[in-house]
Image (cartoon, rainbow, N blue to C red; front, side):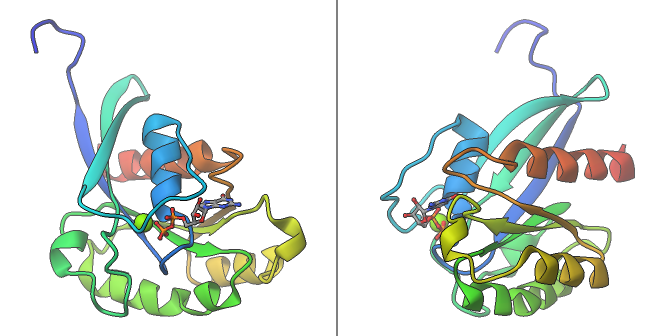
Length: 177
Ligand code: GDP
Ligand code: MG
């Protein structure tokens, strides 16, 4: 494209991981396009979406990768993790099992990714408080023990989605700029 308004200073790859149906694709849709769908089909095709933001006067292109339905244990390939500088490790606050699987995802992530990778633990679907199966305290404790950032989000209500990505990208910026 012509013109000087589209200069990108940095491109940061961030991956979304976690069990199927926790809301990864909707978190990405909310962040990249400010969209949400209640009947989203299992993710197909598209490998990543981008959004460019300004961090400390620099133009940063976030390249966010979403799993294409490979959430079975160990089915995510190493190409997915390659070059990732950040990760959102997502569970569903209404599905205990999705939280119980987080240590596995973390182990897999740490086995494949950059050793300085910035990781945010994300408890999604915070709008479903009446169905909550994972307490905020349990998640916070786990995050502290494992040195992860932690937020509860709602892709549906657009709560903390921006905050989650901003935090991860700003932290990556501090490390890599
Ligand atoms: P993925 O398999 O992790 O990519 O999960 P999806 O993004 O496809 O979401 C799975 C289902 O959860 C879909 O029906 C979404 O509409 C729904 N969902 C995603 N995020 C939220 C949320 O924040 N709140 C509620 N109530 N539903 C959500
Ligand atoms: Mg998906």
